[in-house]
Amino acid sequence: MSFVKELKKSPIAILGAGAVGKAVGADSVLAGNRVHLYELPEYAEISLKHVEKTGITIGGNQNNLYGFERRGKAKFDLVTTDIREAVKGAKLIIVAVPSIAHDRFFDELVPVLEDGMIVHIIPDNFGSLKLRKKMRELHCDKEVIVGGWTSAPYGARIVKEGGVLTPRIELKYRAITLRGAALPMTDQDIFLESSKAIGSFDAITEGDGVTGGQTVLDIGFSNVNPVLHCPGTILGASVMENFGRVFGGNDPYQYSIYSHAYSQSVAEVQYAFYLEQVQLAEAIGVDLQRYPKKNFLSRTSILGPEYMGDDCIVPFEEQFPMAYGTGPFSIQDRYITEDVPVGCHIYHQLGKKYGVATPVIDSMITLGSVMTGQSFFETGLTLEDLDLAHLSAEETLAYLEKGQFRKAET
Image (spheres, rainbow, N blue to C red):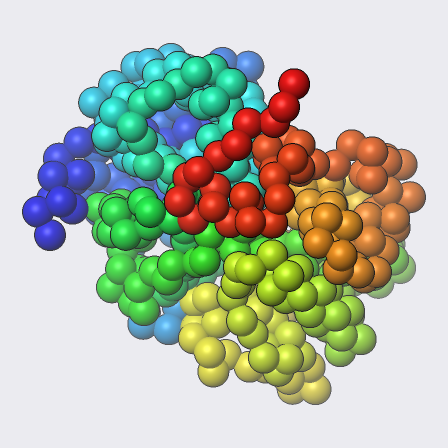
């Protein structure tokens, strides 16, 4: 407990001022943490505008099994575009940005890392591997702990009015458990324990608690976004694009993938996608979050257990309160433009490396590429990007578990 108390004495540096960064930061402030909010200078005009003056107000339904709620207006101790200023005095660093922004943020972060810092990547999306690679490239030998989580502690949406960002964030739900892992696994216990010092994890700490994944590859496989978003968006594209035109009233922005795209047949594709992930994890020698098929055949799918427990099952045949306005509203949404080239493409490459067929996952890459006019097989995240391509199966596990890394021959 003294370790957690000591961490709480230091400010938390939140890198990224999007919905997740602002929500995690504001929620942590309301819990008693001192928080520094950082954004890249090129995005500050939009994401940090007025934040020093208004703070961020947390609201929303905040659904969860144990009824945990926290609401109110939070003012940050520091709002800045100076990375050195942001991490000064911080022991906990939270990277809360989409995976496509990892490289840019890591370029800024690595030169200012200090011994004893603990970096949490929310969600990880293979960011831990990219950060360790960046540290090697920049010859950073600081003693830091690096790890990531399967998702954010909640579904957060910035409230917009007339297309303008307001200082209000709605939390759709609060997770009561999250799966995390450190790179290497030898740092796992400290990494998981440190989450208790982060106020935005309180619903988890006071709920069912965090669970440890079997390496950060486990955390990548356990991220629910690719398996839910890609089949749902691609197979539901006609409903999404016709919503507000042919049916659904006059407002296309009332569309929700959960209410209007998910169905029994779509769930079968999601489950088949998941089984390919299971085969990949087992071939590599790691694990992932396990789900029975009944969770997929539910309107809450595999997201429901994260905030309502394992008994959260709503058959498609039953009436259920509809979700509206959660999107996505275009095929050019990051449900495809991030989840296909990052999640799906890494699974594809791991399948080739370990001899596991991934036809359902590959179909998501093919269809996503055609529908967006992009070439995700060519532009997707690669094993080279993660410094895993040159490692044998045994070397990969040695790196993930013990930190024993062999550099590629030049």
